[in-house]
Amino acid sequence: MWKVLLVEDETFVRESVRESIRWEDMGFTLTGEASNGEEALGMIKRDPPDLVLCDIVMPQMDGLALLKETRKAGIASKFVMLTCMGDFESMRQAMEFGASNYILKLSMSVKDLRETLGKIDAELKSAAAGSGYSTGSDSRSASAPGGAAASLQDRITHPEVNKIIHYIEQNYDRDITLKSLARYVMMGENYVSALFKKKTGETLIHYLHRVRVEKAIEYLKHTELPVNRIGQNVGFMNDNYFIKIFKRMTGTTPSQYRLTR
Image 1 (cartoon, one colour):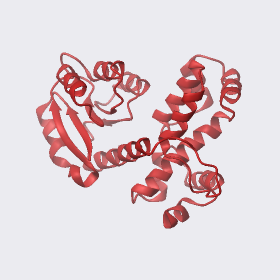
Image 2: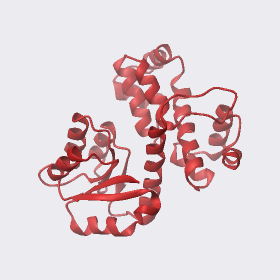
Image 3: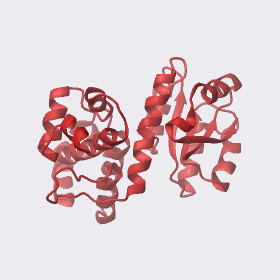
C-alpha cells in the first residue's frame, strides 16, 4: 500500500476527501492528516509518505512552501495540489517544483480523485520498478515511465537539459511544445533543440513521445482505462496520433499491447 498524507486546513474538505475514496481498493492507505504546512513538514520528515495531497492556500506554511521544503530535505514524495479556480500562478510554480498534478477543489469529484490516484499509482510502480529503456527483441519491453528521465539525468550534466528532462517527466500530460520549453529555460528554440539532441542523442519530440508511451504502458498494465482516455492522460489529445506513435515505438497498438500484457 502507498502511504498518503492529507494536508488541508478546511475540515470539511479534509473529511470529504478522506471519506469519498475507498483508499485500499486503489492501493493506498491514508496514514496521516495535517491542517497546515508546518505541521505536515514535521510528519513528512518523520515518516515520508509516498503521496502528499496538499492544499495550496494554508496558514503558517502554504502548500508551495511545504513542497519546496520537502524537496530541500531530499524527500521525493509525490505531491498533488488542491487548489481554487484562477490560482494559475501557484499551480505553475507547484508544477515547476515537481508536483505531479493538481485538482480544483470546487469541482472535485470522486472520479477526479480516482483518476489522479490511478496515475500516481502507475508512477510509483514505475519508479519502484527501476530505470532503463529496453530496445531488445521484445518490442513491448519499454521501461517503466520513471526510467527515461532517471537514466538520462544520470548521464547528462548540462543544467538546462536536465531541467527540460525533469519538466517533461513532471508535465508529460500537458501541452508541451519546443516553444514552451525554450521559454521555460530562457533560451532560443533552435539552440535548445540542437543542444538537447547533442547532449542526449535524440530529438526533443522523440524524447517526449518516449516518455508519454512509457507512461501509457503503465496505464495499460495497471488500469482498465479505455485507450482514448489513456492517450489523453499522457498528453496525446488525438486518438489516432496516439495509436500511431505508440505503434511506431513499440511495434504494436495500445489495444494489442493490453491483450498480450
